[in-house]
Length: 591
Image (cartoon, rainbow, N blue to C red; front, side, top):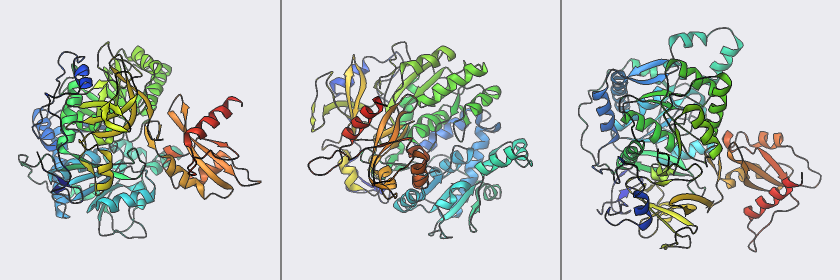
């Protein structure tokens, strides 16, 4: 194919060559070795027929109309009821001018309204831009300006980062009251004159500027649009934008097409051997605005006709409470989720053996955490690897006794990988040697929205996506060796040292700052701010965190500080973060 994609408008145009696929008969030797390890029943390739995300939902509604689709603190919607809400929202969005190629900004924690607004936008041919509702105001403003959303659906607690000084910038803004989707009993309890109820209500609700529209109130007053069969459309048009810094740290919006997401969903559900369509209960603790949470949790669960138990944030108390009313069978998370749930279940003597499947990602999974989870649940916990740019899964351990905690796994169906010399990606390294992982396949993004330079830099001349991750083969499985860039991954979140350094740099008393990742048993890495102080200055961690708390998301705040007399630099004057990290690790040993 020789079509291209105009990433500023979302429509086909000359330019970026698409799609970046590989002939299935021309596999790399590494890909071929991995496919030979597949368990029975796992296909090597996923049919690339160009179906849409909307078609997958319609099929689930037709097959399981009376099955519970969502459970939010005990309030449920069946697939039929969910579809009816989507039809009404489609009519609502159409009234406010949303149409093919337009962008809908979705700024919500996990809740039914997220799913409803997401699919309503896709029904209209619009593109859904997903945002972290806790993102700092400057980051949110850049993202909104970059994709130019016409309509915004935002949590009440985040609306002040969208509407500044009563300026809507031409957008229609719907606010979501998080309590509206809760059972009436819980809503009434939040109105009780108790300190605990007031605190919880304050966490869920916030003031709304004049001119915003209440999403649920508008929805209740709207008549559903007759959606009918899914119209034919180009599967290589954008469906979703997800925000990331990639491996360079500069802000970007990753374009994911219908084909990207559908093929990755189909690969994911095929990977989990014996997964039962129409019979699973997915616990959705990962945020839907993240690629892992969106595709392997929300989209895969709906594709399978599963029940989605929704959590606006992860809490062991919330998960164990939900288990009392609706037993989970599938859960995806980061290693700390499984570590904390294992400990909480053991302490409470809670039965979580219904979890037959679990997938961990975003940071290395230790064998200790995996064994602890499998001992208490009797089910499998396997690790996966991916990127926002790959929709996201590229590698995973099989759901068999051959799984290997601590490794990234083997290649997923329809994905093709190579391990190459970082300075010359045309040359593969020998098996067992360290090299950069590069990827092709129908799940790989066409590029970054409105950013052709970063798009070009992300790919080799032959169209392979450069992950920036250094890996090696170990007895056929892929093992992470190092990160080519100095990205910090803490608790599953990507943190870019330059952004944290910028937030700290202008603090009085600080002459220089470098930010590095320090190993942490719970989070994988913690953010360490390494300071060179002005003469006579003294600073505490609490003071540094207070200075940057309104500039950075909470997960990016420094968790420790170190003080050096000077920072090691290259001959060109660039701070050498790896040497900084080594110095503070040596310093820690002497404490």
